[in-house]
Amino acid sequence: MPESPALPAARPTPSDPAELSAEDGKLVVLARGARGRVGAVEGAAVRDQDGRTYAAASVALPSLTLTALQLAVASAVAAGASRLEAAVVVTEASTLDGAGHAAVRDLAADAPIHVAAPDGTVLGTVVE
Image (cartoon, rainbow, N blue to C red; front, side, top):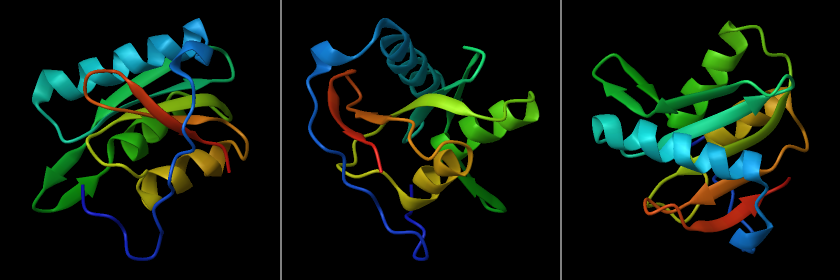
């Protein structure tokens, strides 16, 4: 996904995949599935304050470009979510795009954003 020039990318802090909660592990599975179903560059999943989950893949059309994380957050908001507990993005990139990061932070200043490789290996977590 092209990175937004106005929103800098965030570099995840390496984390121990064994420290991932079962709920966050489910987000990794959902994000991988969303990415794989359509062969997208990214897949993402978020969990809201009620434990509901939303998964999405990146969208790149001539008239519309959304990161997977932006679309997952938008889906959560459209369903009535007002806060996020956690997010996951599955990507080949080594950084979290600024637009997706900002979308999560709009609903949660402190929710962990786990970054995982396409095989599901968690590469790190963004907490700021």
